Image 1 (spheres, rainbow, N blue to C red):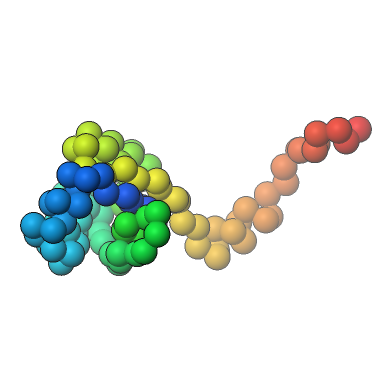
Image 2: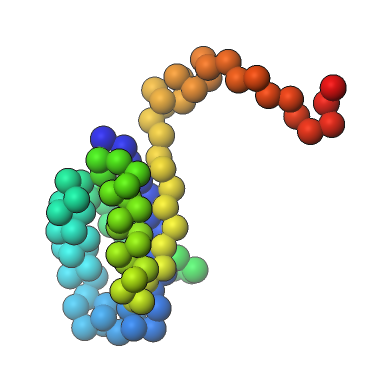
Length: 107
């Protein structure tokens, strides 16, 4: 199953909700909604700085990952970025593919 990293930032309303239900409450809710899409929560961490949460999850496909982001954004409580994570084996497959590419300015 594809693996995704979701980096999220809470809005003021999101922070208020976090203060009400705590960190473990948010992690449990993330686990629940990922499972509702056929996915699995691998890890959930809070961080300092511009990103509030780092979530690593397995999901069936890009459509399910997009559904996570769209639903979270529509709530008005969180904004997020998604990174598709690749395994070393997937990189091995990629390096063996021949790509017809000419860099800008090269002839």
